[in-house]
Image 1 (cartoon, rainbow, N blue to C red):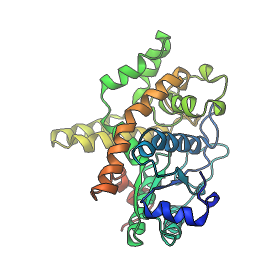
Image 2 (image 1 turned 180 degrees about the vertical axis):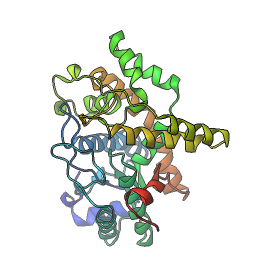
Image 3 (image 1 turned 90 degrees about the horizontal axis):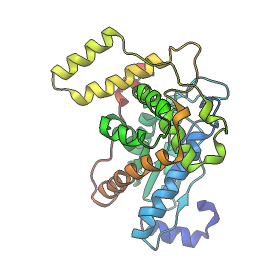
Image 4 (image 1 turned 180 degrees about the horizontal axis):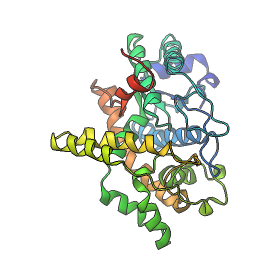
Length: 310
């Protein structure tokens, strides 16, 4: 519930028990013709509530589900009608100030729930969390875990998701577009159909696949070079970065990737079920054991895309 709806005395007691506060940080962003401009927010709310109801609440019966006012801002949203752009430093400041305000009221743990995967967006959130720590607040970003798992997802895991697509032609097309499926495609649309079905177009099954995103020969050489040096994780991150850059060059730009026409709620449910134990492990590792949080992937690219040298 909105923390401003609780009696102040009760709120202070909850903060004393280390009950975490969820903070939604998402842009208003075009997600193709089949999803809403607020899709990232809808998914963030669904994920946060399910995480609390399935894990945090049962483990801590004295806690309540607490959510702060959303921050409707995001760095590097997809280009398209309705997208609203926010500067990197502006987002760092907004998220930092939100944490500092709650710290003054006794909050000691905050969980950022965003479903906007742009590297600079999540790097801005991470820098804000560093600032929170100076005010005595520990924080984690659930999207950092999503991106980490996306990087490490195996072909076998992808195939198990595709088994939930009954139409063999759609299944094959979704598989063919899987590498470039990172915005409003098969994965994200499936999650929207699971968490917020009322926000998904009734014609979603008719949405055509995005043109296939290919790596250039020079990009492939870079990846092979990284793999020869044993930098397999870095190669996976670079592949994701290259595919994202190539996707933005598609003309006309569709505003979505992959193949949303194959999406369904069962796939969305399975994706969340896979993420849930990683959310639980992150909360325990950072809040209970005092270990470092998961850092956002490709955060270093912010230095290039936003001219930041610090």
